[in-house]
Amino acid sequence: MKISPLFKKAYDNMRPGRITMEGFLGDDERTLTDIISEDEKEVKFLKMDFEIISSKLKYFLNEGLKGLGEPLTVDKKWLVRVDEARGRLPCPFEDKIVNKKTVYVKNVEKNLDFFYSDLSIHLIEAHHFFEGKGSTFRLEPSLIKQILEI
Image (cartoon, rainbow, N blue to C red; front, side):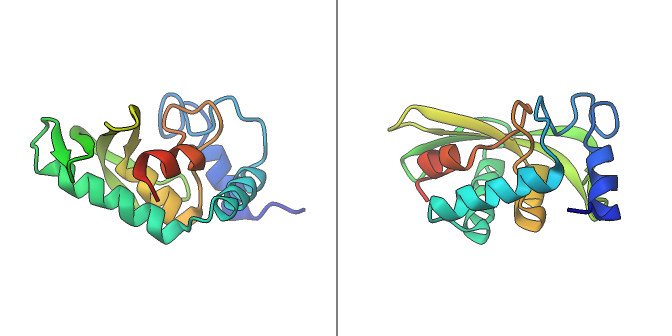
């Protein structure tokens, strides 16, 4: 399968040191199209969809902002904290620049948690990209389903 120029450029941008020091791929050696394709299959298998995932991630980001950097309880079930870093971060697909916010969500009942960023939301919503295996901000679809109860 031939890689489009957009995907080639995005893949290059995802390498360590391009946009972020660690990059977006972790230790994943698959092609970008394979990473996205396999995650799309996983999302379908888990009976989720990208609109619901991104909507739920945005919900916790927006609720967490109300805590002004302090953790707060959302819907009596999730502990959420949003931290804001200085600067902005470009999407490796070069279609959007977002503020750098990190979101911590813990499902207190299940004792499961994860971190994500506002860029993670955009990557999932617009590109179906959860980042490569081993990446710091990789979001496993199965973990999203468990923690957010989608």
